Figure (tube, rainbow, N blue to C red):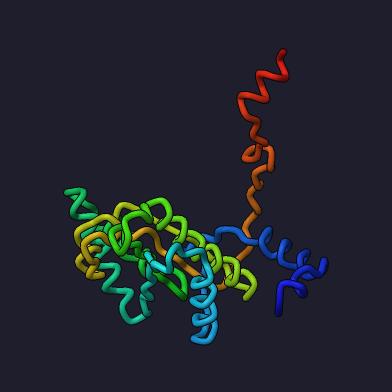
Length: 210
């Protein structure tokens, strides 16, 4: 497929419709089946097409397989213990249970120090965000629900050590993908006028008032 093909109105309409269909589905509402190995590779390939200044590749993704979810739950529990004391058994269990949600779970890690420092933090985060959005859109096209989740555990010593983060690296969010258990009511989207405006220079403003 080339850009001339993409100019087809029907194709554009399909892509636009797909993008408007994407929405967050909470991990607790994502069940089997999840993406298979071929679909995972397609999702990763989609991530790789995001903007990347000087091909720095300032981000990476780590898959947490089913057999290591329990270990992730222990990391969550340890992270909670770093922040609080006298934690109830119920809260600790709930904390660990979060690691078991969604058939596919990946962690996004961004390197803030790698390579040329002219590529600042904002550019690196935007690059990572674009990669994630590509994955979210393709997951939607595959018929899956998805979500991005964060939390205080991402900055914990337990998680840094558990995922062997290098100096300058920071865990940013988890990406969950799976089949939506039941469709929830759609939340209203922003209207374009809420985030869009047309800039005019001060010179033009002053001319219009004279």
